[in-house]
Length: 211
View 1 (cartoon, rainbow, N blue to C red):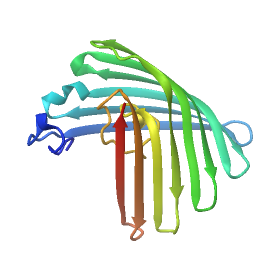
View 2: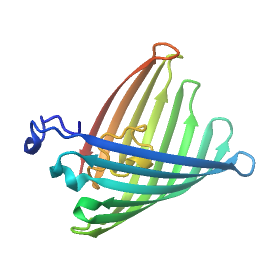
View 3: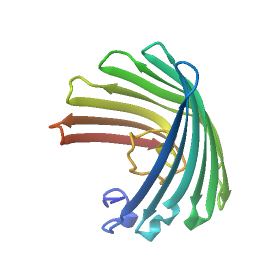
């Protein structure tokens, strides 16, 4: 369900089902010693059963190219470029987005890892009421594994929810994707417990604030 009726009075007590599809593929190629390149292609679509949500229906494709190098055994860093094409078909609005970014992964200890990305993004919109924008975007994540069965992940991010699926924000979560092209601040907590070799439990908390 996209909306539970408690916050949006215009759709209160009306069933609204969100359907989300995500498909991606990544190809990686080793270059010189401790250096590598990868290309990721992804497709995402989001649709709603309630027609008053037509303005949020979105189809988008993206291609991302990254170059990275391992510095010692604890730090990996690199740079990349991404291009995203999106279509809000119900309201005849399309956009092209471009991202230049730096990223890194740092294994602080055997139990703790910090990773992040910072970059500059700009978008060109067409159709009714175009919303061109540019600015700094990024995210910072901390993964903590205190035991073999328990792990925690924390992320803070500043990006558009419509594009977060292509920047690894939300750890694959599709909740809310496509519902805005406005830059959004977010924080996310996820905890996972491996009950057995075949069963695990997880809980998460997400908070987003739009400008």
